[in-house]
Image (cartoon, rainbow, N blue to C red):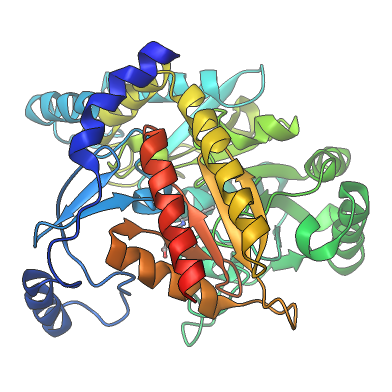
Length: 448
Ligand code: PLZ
């Protein structure tokens, strides 16, 4: 462990935050003006800065400001920015075969990725995969596959979930705004049931599962449901960790009723929580697992992996797409799996938790608005409530985010009410960098 840690620390000195201009700096401002003329207003801009290059947990903007990156491109850069192994694998592959379309002329890296996913997703049974381009596309495919397999039409999801921005996945999201407003009609046959959120609902896993299941049985009918799609730890919803026993009860109910249980591990999967897939923490074995984000080390790729009989339900030609499982992205995935093993990245994710969680809990003891600290591995969050009204306090999350930006730390908000700050750093972030970032949050809260 010490060896692995020291292997990443030499770069620490060169990756400290360092703000050298006003934020945004002049070159970022210039780019922003160009952007406003040519990029659709529908694409939001969380930060007013423009990135020039990045390595490990540091992003350097076009004005030379160094930012400590606790966003990881929303949980993508688990292995770190411009990870040397990923860069080498991608460079080699792009010169060898850039594209054929797997259904036209196959290639080994696609098959290897499916083997690795079969090996590392939960469950000891024959598994198969299909590779696609994005998390949302993978969710769409999981639903298609489950419908074909079961011959049923209805799709069940949970409150506070997030599954993407396509028409079907927008219908599967809890928040109508900004994902669905004015874009309808959204896909039908999608049913939203209450989730488990111990901090908010105070229910045990058993009680929360009863509530979810009763709704689905009464309102939808168990025999009508093709699949239940669940994030084991809800991401955009605010890193909501369900109560113990909740997910196992849902899986058991699905299996008793012929419903395909789909684990959407787009954000929580691939090392992020200190396990390959977060489902492992809850002792569940999903029928299908959706992975994306972190598996590609920054290259666009996503997958549906699961029970071979379910994955084979589609007729040939029913699944696919031009770029799905592109060879360059596949080469990246293979190198990411290799890095996880070689550098003990699962251990690093757990180290992030053991350094960061107590530091955040110390802040909680000091700042009454900081109401909850939660999450697993390098997927941690803090939630702000107004100490007087006990209502969500998004303005505090926003103020801390803005303060941190100016101090050189990038942090994302999350949560249905925007009152959560979430941390998704590359797992190779050093302990010094973590504690430095927490001290910035402390300063921000003290300054309020
Ligand atoms: N399922 C659980 O977290 C993507 C969304 C960012 P795509 N989350 C980040 C944004 O504002 O669009 C996500 C997720 C879960 C599915 C998705 C969708 O993955 O690769 O963005 O399509």
